[in-house]
Length: 71
Image (cartoon, rainbow, N blue to C red; front, side, top):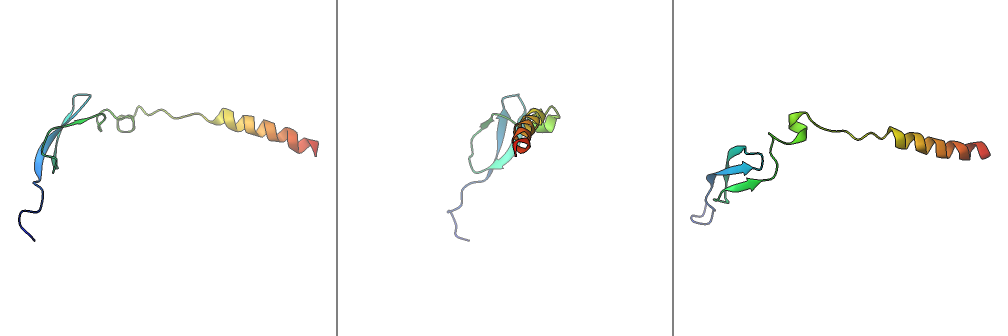
């Protein structure tokens, strides 16, 4: 490998908006601020919301059921 061409790889602190502090390796070499992490993301916390699409499917079936009766 060539010398003096690779960036420095150091341990930095990444701070989330929820207050969680994580130490990670990076070539950035300065503290990092995160918007979301595994401590506050809905997927990891189990507070995930799902979209209900049942109403849309029923609406679609009603619309096209009327068309199939006309033929």
